[in-house]
Image (cartoon, rainbow, N blue to C red; front, top):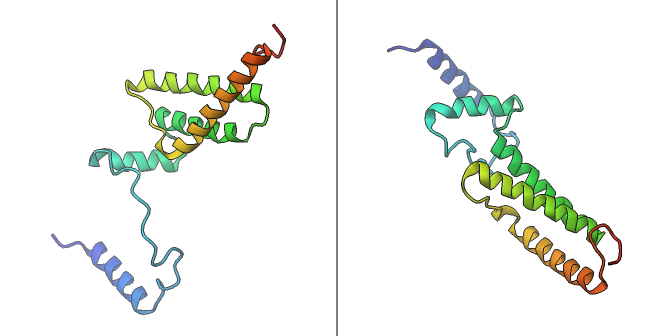
Length: 140
């Protein structure tokens, strides 16, 4: 089958290449970003890209982003009691996501943050256990 539109488009692209219009494009020579929809079936990829470009993300991806943001925020908290409370909230978020998915959440991108936060919470638990301070800040 003869596709006139494809031939015209190819001609325009070839002409632009010859004139050097593609020489100064941003990201030239750099590897392409991995396709986020590569793990989806081919018939769903276009729908995923349309929904993503319109600002909609599936609930699992939204929840995963919220978990990552919570981990980032936890790293910068100075107050040990607040950090402990936020860590408890993070654990609830992860538990809820695990229940929805039916499989554990993997935090491989932020595993180092998570490890450091868990270590800090353990230090805080030890500290509060020794001083007799409860979560609400009152002495026992």
